[in-house]
Amino acid sequence: MPGKITLSVIKADVGGYVGHSDVHPTLLKKAEERLKAAKEEGLLIDYSRQKVGDDIALIMTHEQGTNSIDIHRFAWETFEACTEVAKELSQYGAGQDLLADSFSGNVKGMGPGCAEMEFEERKSEPVIVFLADKTEPGAWNFPLYKMFADPFNTIGLVIDPNMHGGFVFEVHDLIEEKRIFFNSPEELYDMLIFVGAPSRYVIKNVFRKSDNVQAAATSTQKLFFIAERYVGKDDPVMIVRSQSGLPAVGEVLEPFSFPHAVAGWMRGSHHGPLMPVSVAQDTPTRFDGPPRVVGLGYQISKGKLIGPRDMLGDISYDNARQVALNAADYLRTHGPFEPHRLPLDEMEYTTMPDVMKKLAPRFESTKVTK
Image (cartoon, rainbow, N blue to C red):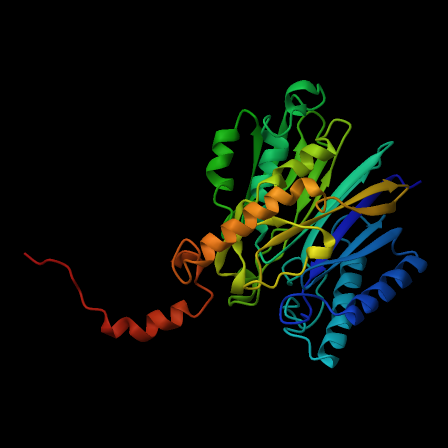
């Protein structure tokens, strides 16, 4: 059994079938072939090739640690190989999440979404990997707050002595590229000022305060900040460990019983409900949406990924799906008007700046002169 293991989840859109709705089976086969070879060669302990919408997710266990050049290069080259298949099949947006011509040591900042965590395996290690499509990294702020800071969601914060001391949230400012750590519960109100603005402030990691055990990790990159233009959604990933002094599986899943509003949807420029779905319902088509999330449950044993179980396909999420569909109807009726369309300060990477520049000479002053 390995000492510390690393769980890496790296996801990218390298070609849609049809449009932005799904991944062609041939691309998935290529990813599977490369993952299998990497395991046989000893780079990986185990892997699970998954998808959501038009994104391919590489879920990998290994002993290379986080930010491993070898692991990240493998993921990048896998997405490159899948891109070549996508081009052969004329898939939509082939290679759109690969924002560089060549690998430069780490996939972070190069397009793919990446969440990683290194830890010592417990006697029983339940982990849930969440994959979202047609939304942004800040989509995880609400559920992470509920899981690790809200006793109405997580009763373990009240009655489990191993959780009662609270958690530490690492929050990143995506615009100024800096971070801050908040202690919960004592700094909760301060933290909510920031994480309540998920288009800019994103929860990156969560740690148990008593011993600094890592409980959650997310991807944080926003593609339009990287590319300086609209290139698609950001489609984030999240890893959450559960049980034994961490939120129970049911407490980890409970936040998704409410389909909270997130940014993304069509052309990454609209608000919509984050709908929890089964893996069989992960293909968004209505207005390229609505945004959706799947939950993949694994028991990790000696680095092996036992699973996945489809955690959000349960019938108990049917009401959440209906609420999401009702909310989608309501928001879609607004068309190009806010709050369905994102506010102007988040439309910087669409045609808005070009339109403003073109029309600038036609704006006349309305200032009152005395």
